[in-house]
Image 1 (cartoon, rainbow, N blue to C red):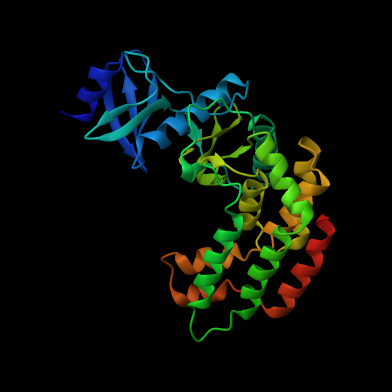
Image 2: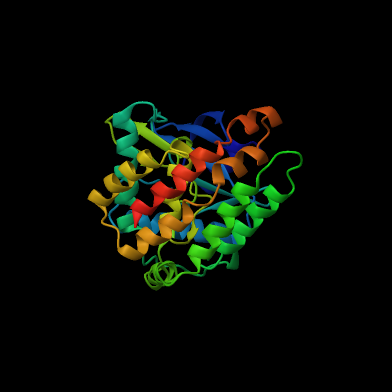
Amino acid sequence: MSLAGHIETLYPLTITRIKKVRDVQRMLTSDGRALCCKTYNFPDSEVDFIADILIQLVESGFPYGPRIVATRDRRLWAKRNDKPVMVTNWIKGRSPNFETPSEWKQAIRTLASFHRYAQFPILREVPAGRERYTTLTSVIADYRTTLQHVQDIPVHAFIFLCDEATRYLGEPKSMEAVKCEAAVRAWVHGDYNYPNLILDRKGFMRLIDFENTSLQARMTDLAHILHRNAAWDCDELLRWIDYYDRFRPLSAEDRFLLYALLHVPYPLVRAIRSKISRDKWISTMPPGRKIDQYISGLRKII
């Protein structure tokens, strides 16, 4: 059975057109709606978790997330070819351009706003792999291993940054920050960056694709978008941390945790693991002097 036929069997919808966009299907219905159909390669329990998170986000009052379309029997997702599929509203718009200052600022504001709602979810269960408060050091250890496997290129300075990040995560303020996040069941988007944001036709910035969501300290979202868009530029990092703080004030513990996370040489590790050429990722490595300036500048966060 075609995807359209399968969806029409399970959902109170009549599909008039389907088009593949990235890793999802854009569906048009007979009543003029545009919907998104996503297939997951996750266990059922993890899709339940994602659905619960999306429902909680809507019910908490955050207006800029996806809205699930229920099946005929009011389930939050269905199955096709033994794989979970979920239907949500399609957000009309475009990915933001972070080279445009106003759109970059809006992304930081939207993240701060989203984080105010990202706590106390009502969940049926939490799959073991989706509760990640205690996984930060193991993630860094994995990054360190990636760097250790690099041959013929001096990466000892970046291995040192991994060790420093791990050391700072073990400091009381970082541990207290994570403890506080766990106490409120804080959760994160997990990949907050321009591909997973849509600037809609009314000028609002909306979040999409929550497949990497988990129970985790919210500073990991902020560290991620800063690593991706202001790598090794401490002045820019500080500027945007302060901007985020205007909309969601950071505690001293949050700041220390963020300080630890920004020591992680994620931009380089990501480049090494990507499909770009060796010469290209080598070109992304900052010189030793810049690393020293970066480390020194990070102290201003705390």
